[in-house]
Image (cartoon, rainbow, N blue to C red):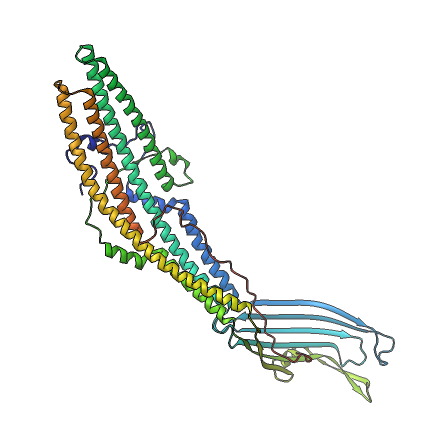
Length: 542
């Protein structure tokens, strides 16, 4: 394809295309000679809409971190003091109440297991108790205990539980946010390219309108001379001057359109922190590309179906829906768990040695340090253990049944959405390819029309110069030439836009910047780690 700067045998159009300054835009404004690659680089670096989507990827990464928090070990500690005074309840206490004072502490760690859905805990507790009870054996009484506990689901929550479901979905949403960012980059870059060539075309249109105004002004000058010489009637001068006024208005409108196009491109690529950039005049220096070979339609469709970012995101949505189905179906199963625990205890303090019948007479004391109690806690001297199975299952139609049915419907919807997107992708690629072919053919037709319009104008001008034509016919030839030049500009712009769309639609749906910026992602629910304590009969104690 001949470039826009090489329209065959169309000198006026070539002059218009070489122009790069909108009417009235010269002044003292600084000029930025802008290549297309530089415009693309600037939009990726500075466009605030892309920055929003880029931050969305960080939001999704933070959500993944939130879900991993469900598996973080939880450390707990408590330190306290208590006092309990009770009235006497037997004859050994007389009239004196029982006063018990405690210093106690407890420290432990618990954690959810990433595989299998189990939880474990380790805790250590200590206490120092003093009392005025005459029948106590230790005063002060030092106690220490070390406990291990583990809870393991066997059916429900074994394959998948709420924590794992949240983590899996959050990871996929993070991948989807990366795809959404790439999709927005493709769409925004395509928008910048269209804005670049639109500015290029509007600048060339200003030059073409200026050239047309110059032709009309020259015709008016010649008519003025001929009217003064009595060769033509004054009405021909009025007609020529009216045409000059009309074309001056067209030039003003073309200049305003060029400045609007410049602002649209500037809005996309400027750094929001640089307010002075609004005063820089953009000079697009690249020439339109030559027309390439006819696009391979089948290859373009295959590429779109294999690599479109919206299809990849839809597949992630389907996988998330499948994960929800698996989780909710799992929640319909009986909750069967193995509960185990073991506790070692130790006792120390000042022990009263008694002799005689109950309650005996204190004959002496024996002291054991807190280290003795701590050592006993690590032995099997005073063991307490439990092991058992718990089972729970809702009877009748439950919330889990309804939730699983809803999730299955949503999974089927996600699958149908993928089928719809595949049809949409194939259709949009085929439409874009047809636009490229038709635009290329229109360019050839417009160039031929411009060549013929130029030839007709030259012939009509020569006939006017020798008195064989009229002002009306020359003016009409000038209008036809201008329209032909504008048609060339428009068809070249349409071709560039179609080529840009065909390239972009193979990776992302067509759209402007910001159209795919909707922030998504389910809220992460805080899932406290349960603390297993073993299983004991209801009337017993641990």
